[in-house]
Image (cartoon, rainbow, N blue to C red):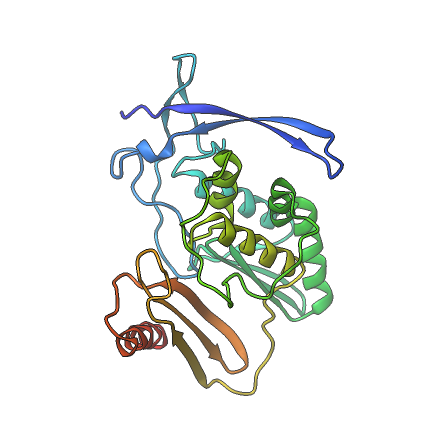
Length: 294
């Protein structure tokens, strides 16, 4: 079988005052070397619909000491295509321990039923939707999740960038001037690359990344609220700029789709090809949102 390499990643985490909090070591597998159909069959990505997921439970990995070892399903090794399956297994075990039962028809749905209390827990890739007949039980479940899976992800990103006290902004996209990659080279690209990989800055450049982090600081305590609505009408809004990216002259499209009063789908991304007119850029955006509504 294909032998996948790995490497050790060492990191020092620091407190807000700069003192060392702890030293971390992580063995990361080079999952990009895995071959589909040989090392795994399908990547696991629960999307709240009945689907059969198949994933290989064994893996041969070469360590830095040139020793062959087998990593099984119950061990999460960062970087592997099987990592999402291991994470889902962890979440599954926790939900079962607090009284949920997995649905027999949908791998992404978990149901809690005790007397007149009904709770529904749905997983969509890395997003979670919790619904229930009793708001107190929903709040209790969320508190248990917070204790079991501590979420400090966004705050950790801001700490690593030294931007905990940065001025927040309401949007990650610059509204005053276009951002280009024509900047002075970053003296130490290591931190930038690390932050860019986590913050998913797809506009490029250090200035764009800093704006994304300022946006993260704005939304630390925000969430998506889904409430009951008297309407089931679908409303969609779309917009596009034209050649907004000065490096490749591609346009950016965005849309938002509402079911009643609830936002259920949204996208903001660069178009794949260069539009030769503003009308063409608008039509591409309309085509995307039309396909989503359909």
